[in-house]
Length: 38
Image (cartoon, rainbow, N blue to C red):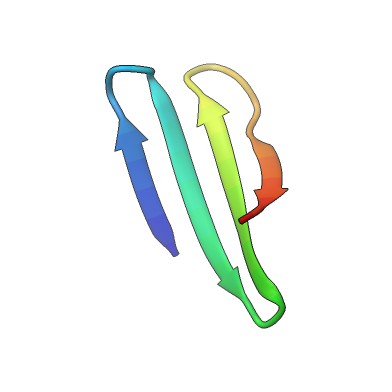
């Protein structure tokens, strides 16, 4: 699992490697994350 913090935009990106690719969850502070394939 990789976690990337973007302080300028206030977002947190979490990448979870999976067997069939990986899923990235990008969430803004105080909001629910959007899951998308990367």
